[in-house]
Length: 144
Image (cartoon, rainbow, N blue to C red; front, side, top):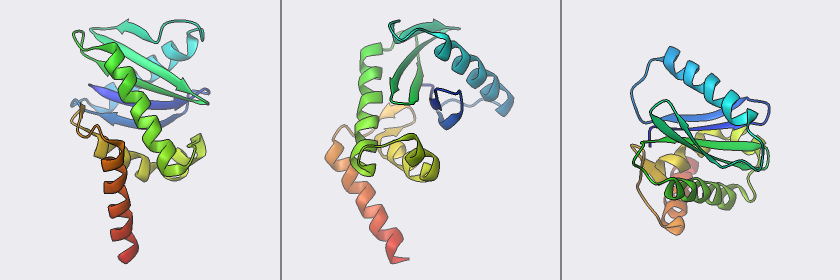
């Protein structure tokens, strides 16, 4: 995976994770372009699209779009599953996650993503193990 973006239906970027080195200018350009492209698509359209030399896989959950860029040879269905697993982890942690949870607890959302994905690759497939690691980190934080 090259990067993951979370943005609202209004086009507001809520979370971004880049797994490839790019300049801030390039990241902004890519983000602006992709947000416009994805938001312009109709709900019944396919969740995959070819963009530049990458494949874009996105899924909308409530008011948030989860958008990933993958290599041409990568599997779109596995990427959809990765997005879904991340949403499940957020749901479990926040108890039915919403956009406000991401806005006000973005560091937790990043932490959950980092426990799940490392360098754009799935690190841990078990929801239970990811949540256990997050709970342990929360306990450590509370002790400080």
